[in-house]
Amino acid sequence: MRKSFFSVLLISVLLLSGCANINSDENAPTAYNSPNSSAAVSESNDTTVTSDSSATPSTNQTVSDIDTSQVQGKITNLHYIDDNKILIVADNLYLYDLYSGSILKQTERASFSEENYQAIENGFAVIGIGGDNNGDGGMIVVSGDSVVSCIIYDIELNKVLEIRGSQLVGEDELFFSPLLLTVSWDGTKIAYATDMALYLYDIATGNKSTLINLADDDAAGRSGLSIFEELAFINGGSTIAFVSKSFDVPAVVGASSFDTYGTINADGTGLSVKRSTDYSVKNMIAYDSMIFWAEDFTVSSGRLMLMDNRSGESRILNLASTLESGCVFGSESGQYFATATINEDSVIVRVYDAETATLLLEEAIIEESEYMSRQPVIRVFDNSKTCLVLLGNRQSDIATKILTFNF
Image (tube, rainbow, N blue to C red; front, side, top):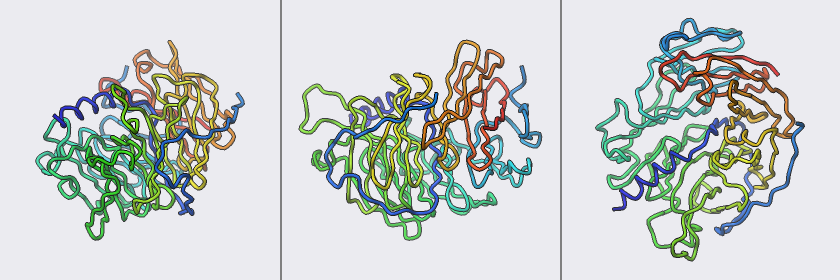
């Protein structure tokens, strides 16, 4: 019965999950001051900052400076790696240098049904579910037969380490999403969550510790936390940030769970769980010293919450359009963020300064109608002030287009 309940819950989460994209780029470690050492659910104390206001699938069309002529297969995504280098995900993985306009390395791509890429120091991690890793054991997802793997690569695209689900998850536990496993910036620790608990795993020793037990009766001790939806390391790996769902404590008969978010120290202390009554946090874009908390795209209001990880203080950034806040992308190291909205015949892409919410770029992209049916993926590079927009990467029947803009 428990597994059936969480299967239904997972489907609901997937249907409601927004467009916000996690792009973790944890740079130099910073000191951490817990925003709330107690475990009480509280509203965020926010202040407001006002903004100034038909190709084939196997052929990737090149626009401007991005040369994809050597890329095999359809491009499905781009990810930040290091200093204006991107990882191109197609039939294989390609390390691409934006400065030289060339492919530096390539390697075979692991096959997963779901995957998430995360930049770490001198490399990246791929967290995947399903695909050719079925049969590993120690893992039950909604389908009952999928497993998770965490593969760590160095900057030369050499596979350094692979950790399988059987090393992490018990036979009676459920693991829902690649967003529920995150690797510390230095590549030494893994935080991950199942339906039973939030765990910390030491890669060198193989030791696993339980940070939050979701199965015990102490609901008040964990502020009513019932399930995690996203995880990320912040503050030099000393803290784990999360998006979650919680129930009222004490329980209210007939009441539903609600969206919460917060942090916990990597040693299991300092749990802080927050709920904003007028802003529903649904996704996070986490960096070492700051987090964008993106709101539910189904009720987007044109606002974006920004939190300072040192102080735990938040403020609200007001965007140019109400619908923007449902599709937010962080830049390479967090100096900027981008949004996308779809109109009848165009996609409007905007790039903002993260500190002041000043609008720096606004582009109306007009393409064939098939490219207007899905939200684009946007990547923004801080040093070069370059914005890359992927169109059609989520649609198997059309070619991926990559558009380049400078701001």
